[in-house]
Image (tube, rainbow, N blue to C red):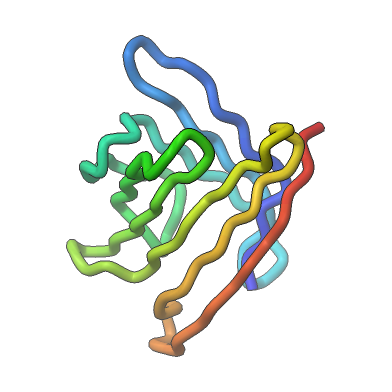
Length: 112
């Protein structure tokens, strides 16, 4: 399974830029970027062979909905929840991997 090791969110004009580094399913280095708004609309992803569009939708002050698409088809949905103290982020996803297998995953990340 692919694993994210760092995620950086930064302001890019009136957008947010999300940069993700980690490893792919074969434990090789992976890097992808997304720039857009947390408005539920699809924005392009670069560097990820398993997705070409991603959208984030603000649910509340600490929760985002996530949708990932490849070729216009939804492959992953999920939620990102930031703890009240801002130190932990929990990402829960489900979908279909590139081989057609269904999955569910929950990962927790600590702020560095």
